[in-house]
Amino acid sequence: MSMTTNMLNLVEKDVDKAIESVQEYYSNIENNLDHVIEQLQRALSQPMSDSHLVKTSLQNTIKPLAKQYSDKHKELHGSISKIGKTIDKCFQSDFGNVPITELFDTPEKYKLIYMIICEDLYRQGRMAIADKLIEETKLNDNDLFNLEKNFLEEINTILENIRERNLLPAIDWCLRHRNQLNQTGSLLEFHLHKMRFVQLLQTENFQQAKTYLANLRQYSISKGQCEQEVNQLMGALVFAQRDLAKSPYKYLLEPHLWLQLSELFMQQAFQQVGLAQDSPLYVVMKIGFQALPALMR
Image (cartoon, rainbow, N blue to C red):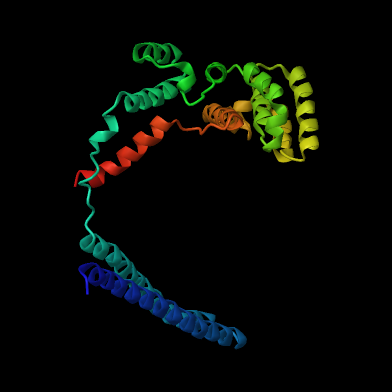
């Protein structure tokens, strides 16, 4: 019998023991629960001559069982965690082949790294740095994974406007891509208009806000969605004429809503052109950092 087979048998033995303990645990719980339920039903069916005595009797029955199963539950955790310890003991991770020097042994492979870095720079709106890197590394724009530079420039401009509380470019983008957004069931346009409505309330432009709210309500009816949110905006309109910040709708003024709106816009925009929200460089770095603890042991 090989060493690997012996190791697998050790792990299998721990797994079987854990499964047996779990099954026994739940079997005992079911039996004792049935017994407790019978006692409760019997107590409730009798005349309540001394309710305190009945209550004390039931508590004395239930408390020891609760402690017993609490202790047993801790033992189960020990049995299950033992499986992981056995696996770690029997199967040592071999990271000897992790450093692969051939990854960077040709100019073509370096070119892939430069392209990944450039794509990340484009996503962050750092166009000038990306263009400089392309120039210095002799890359061609068309090699950047067919990335649409103009698209990224437009999206970054819109995101910058959202950060500056200017929603009009984002709303205009949604109008131009409404058909595609509707096909995916996106509510991006509604959330942009919702935030624009809140801005009108903050500037006390109540007449325009009423018109805006009527349009939002019509939008909600046509989509068959967001009715509850529109009703909340109607309440906010009433309270805003006093002080929205001291009303039940003050949550509409929370700064984090702008961050959520930016993330939603970026997600929906990237989805329209088939790009992942996270860049390849970010994904690779994230995986690398997650692997570091194991590599440093």
